[in-house]
Image 1 (spheres, helix red, strand yellow):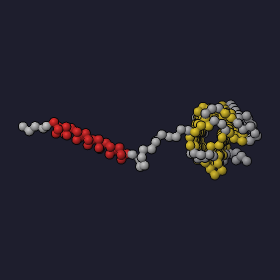
Image 2: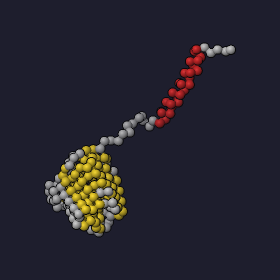
Image 3: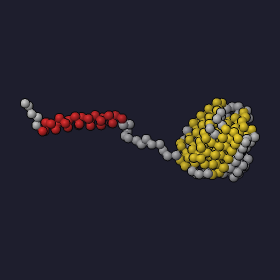
Image 4: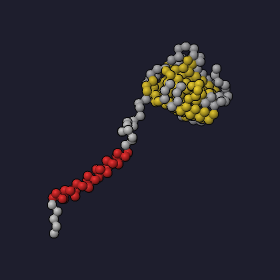
Length: 204
């Protein structure tokens, strides 16, 4: 009978293990992106603590209740960049009921697209939320209340206002004739003088 010494036995056991390690390393190496292993976590949202203009793409989050527009005209938060998400985190943007003021404005003369606004209460403005010259805008889980105009959409396309509320405004929602594909079928109304209307021209 041929006997196998202990050294040969160890080689027979170790060799397959080494082969498995080499194969596993090769598979992991193939899966690595070129240039090394980069972080995959998304950048934390940028905090918004007061009235300001958002002019760069990214994620933003309100860090508290605030308001502004002390003059006869002006806007509190202006989004004039594309690819922006604003998370209100349930906070309020409150004005003083002053003429020609806007709580939350999405507008850029050259156009803006891919904007999402959600989870915010906007109250006591001339226009609570105003979307102008924009496309692919989503307004979700917001309340536009106690303003002359709750939500207005001018010269914009593919705007969705969903699971939101317009309450105790003079006008709940206004959409001009130049806007197309504006869906506000899930907007809830309460106590507005007029819930919705279309056809009014662009504000000067």
